[in-house]
Image (tube, rainbow, N blue to C red):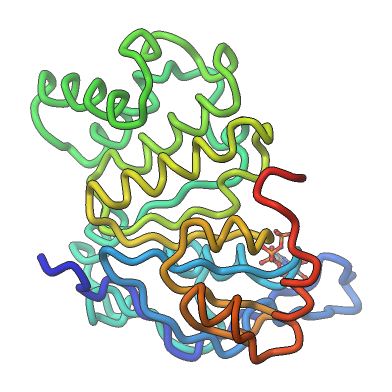
Length: 266
Ligand SMILES: Nc1ncnc2c1ncn2[C@@H]1O[C@H](COP(=O)(O)OP(=O)(O)OP(=O)(O)O)[C@@H](O)[C@H]1O
């Protein structure tokens, strides 16, 4: 499997939502994503940055197959996912994993960490029972949690530890890429850098592709090889961290840079 193998490609994706403010009689629409094209490859971290409401989460949902585009196409390993077979759909689900902002709501509060991690293995029928057991502890080790963490429920551990569990779950099926939507925003300032370092570390060790989404351009710079700046649903700037930071071409990028909060601030 080559380092820069294409996993997911979006071409001219547009997503129009029916606005939450609309009534039965007035159906307002919001264009959350507008003509976005991008390619996610193994071994590369793409950072997507933009202010709240610019369409980042909608774009993330398209990439992981939770949201169908209104227009445009999504390709998984070169196959248009609208034409995928059941087998391709299953592989897509395994290959593209997601981490959400708030581990408190992303994890079932009644399941032990052990069950959270073994659930995807059971659902996908991976390995024998003893292999699945071993995999649970391998995953805990991968994200820096002790084996004893398997016995607790999410409410018994800290926010940072819960996000480690969410990362372990995202890694359970050996994905090719991880889409991380604001993975540090709900965490205490003191643990944000640890979680960023963990994500960078697993990405390098496992040669994953990563899509890192944040409203904080400094956080995005910290982890990304390539940065895409999103504004009102469109990608207005794209380049390496150096290009975007040293030679921003779009006025909005300059505004973001001017207002850039630090990594460790709210
Ligand atoms: N399911 C939905 N129904 C209606 N409108 C939606 C829906 N999801 C998102 N929107 C709207 O689409 C726009 C983009 O939202 P989205 O959540 O994708 O942006 P975002 O950049 O991730 O913002 P945030 O960080 O606040 O979640 C917003 O105007 C939002 O209100």
